[in-house]
Image: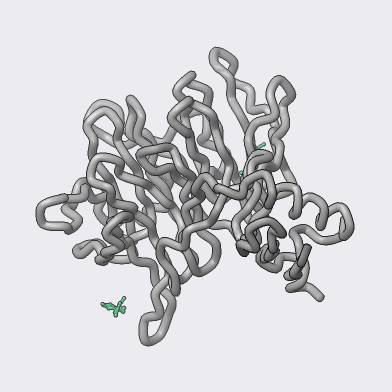
Length: 302
Ligand SMILES: *[C@@H]1O[C@H](CO)[C@@H](O)[C@H](O)[C@H]1NC(C)=O
Ligand SMILES: *[C@@H]1O[C@H](CO)[C@@H](O)[C@H](O)[C@H]1NC(C)=O
């Protein structure tokens, strides 16, 4: 019954007074029930979700089947118009970063770093020809992670150089918060480095981190293979705030609504008219079936 564990929540509640049907097919995020809008479907592992708030464009990378092998491509979609196009000019497009200082989008692939041109809707070469780029992060400084050695580099004096503090470790995801704390993950675990200390504090070593993001209030979220986590302050640990089977990416739209992906679709969470009703119903079902990670498909008729 492996698939039962993560079945989509689908509770249909018939309210006796107005006999209106309510489908509780959204999710609980941080103790609040949200309706779930499917934005884009039939995608292969949508990774690295980045919302460009001024243009309304959502950037993400996903797998595409080439004749002989699986490759990555970066696509942009207008979230409200539901129009998508692949970004031309970047082989094996995978890494995506937003530069908040200059309102630019940077992209990385098999052959270096590119800047997105919003007019031509294509990638223009920027730096690091011949290098394969796993991740990019821009805030004050310009960082990238090289693939496959997972070495973190920073732009300094007209050059990209390895970050000294990270010279002996691999880094898979790297993030600097508004408060200038550093979060990073590698194959071993998820860590935090609080300024001015240099020591990496362990936050979580039992899930696979796929993206680290920050909302408009400066709260940090970790998208992991089994859901979404936040830092459980003041403890040095994380707390799961949403259970999602195979979450791949996370970002926020211009109203700070959550946009996330699972292995084949991208969703947006929206405030629900039936929030209390669905929250109660889902919690009641979870209590009856504590083994289940999520709630099995079922109908309740009252
Ligand atoms: C398939 O891969 C080859 C070599 O990497 C590339 O030249 C070609 O454009 C790719 N085709 C598609 C449809 O992505
Ligand atoms: C991940 O980072 C931690 C903290 O710096 C380090 O101890 C560990 O060796 C790193 N793992 C890998 C695979 O580099």
